[in-house]
Structures are given as structure tokens and as C-alpha cells.
Length: 166
Image 1 (cartoon, rainbow, N blue to C red):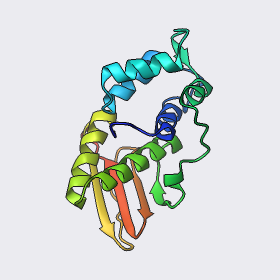
Image 2 (image 1 turned 60 degrees about the vertical axis):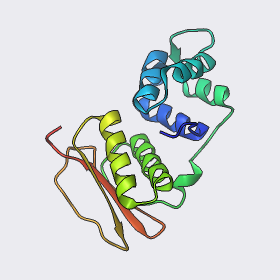
Image 3 (image 1 turned 180 degrees about the horizontal axis):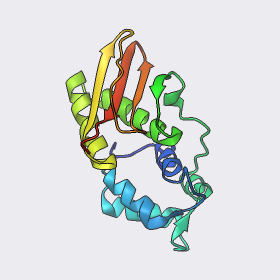
Image 4 (image 1 turned 90 degrees about the vertical axis):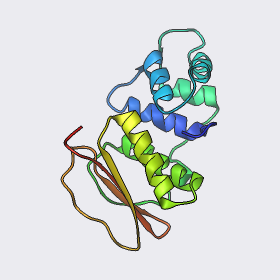
């Protein structure tokens, strides 16, 4: 995660976590922020901003109001063409954002891939694989259900999947 993540990324993270429920415990959001690489002190400050009354749970609206950001779709996602996926939508968006952010921060494909794998393993558990290919290449593989994603962005094909060994 970037040192200063953009508000729309933080809201997408929240959306991913509540994809199956209406509210989220504040501590769960804080824990996930730290798993993404945010320091505990910064995650605590952010959660205090989002849940100032310390109710112990937050809604998407709470996150949007605190961050003064009400996104519909992240701008970075508009040029994405998803080729194949079996992931829930918000998880997919979070992972695409993570991949593209890593690509922008690293000069080499290998550096970007190493960072993506490290972050995926840290956030979603072990045994993630990823690739970047030029042009119109991608492949089909056996993978853990709900973990496959291949998409194109600016002339490259990006893919990730989690193997069964996890």
C-alpha cells in the first residue's frame, strides 16, 4: 500500500470488506488497513476519524464522509478490460488497484510482480501467483475458486491466481 493511500482506494477496501454485509466492525477495518501496510498509529487515527463516537462499527457512508470522497468507480479502473475472473467485484477492484499501483511504483516488471505477490500473500493468504505479459496473451490455469483474474491495461495483460496449496 502507498504511504498515503488515496481516499477512493480506502473506500474500495471498505466496499470489499462489506460486500456481503451492511456494516463493518471498526476493528476489522483497522486490522485490514494494517494488513495492507498502514502503520497501526495511522490506522487508529483514520478509524477515530471514521468512527468518532466509537460505536465499534462503521458504514460506507461513515468512510465517505470522513474522507470527503464519494466515488462511484475509481478513475484508474475505467481503462481496464477484464478478460476472465471468478472473484467478487470489490475484491477484484482492490487487487487491480494494488497491481497498477505496484506497477507505477516499480521500474521493472519483476519488481512490480514481487511487490504484488508479497502484498497478496500478506492480505489474502499464501500461494498467489502473478504475471505481466505484452499484447494479447493470457492463460487458463487451475486455481482456488474466487481467486482468478486476468485483465488488460495499456497494452499489457495482467493476471493473478491463488493455487490450491494455500
